[in-house]
Image (cartoon, rainbow, N blue to C red):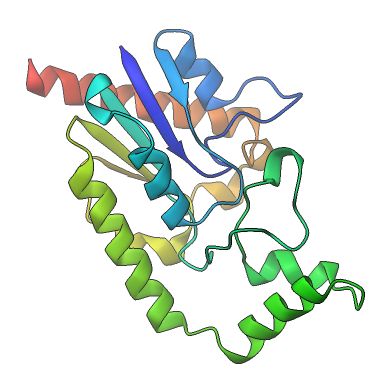
Length: 197
């Protein structure tokens, strides 16, 4: 099966690690992975729009936190795994520096201008658009409890309660966590394609 994966760091290829659920999935499927670490839902939409979805048998979307805000250039992460990263306050405040005006501006924007209701609305709209433009079977994955209420998808896996018990260094999960996600995704693929046959 030819599978497109889009999303954030939960589904991207991490350097110098083995045993991710993506790697396990690639042992029996052809994978094209456009995921990038730390991206907002807007950039996940752009990942999908950058390719011909109909060329794939299945799309897997690893949705991100609803509080990630799009930026063209992150004030800290400019190279490596997080070079396409978007803004989230928990990533910014520990790295504060008076000598980085972009970082100071980003932190102050969150402090004085961030509107959680607006952000959740925008997130839901983008997520609905993602769901609507995928024209082939799809599986949608969540790892963040705050993002779960926005889920309009039919084939949906919610790992937001599982992640805290299996946090690790391979796509944010332990080896056991990755094996479990692989198992759940594989079961969903089997059910999805048995239904459509």
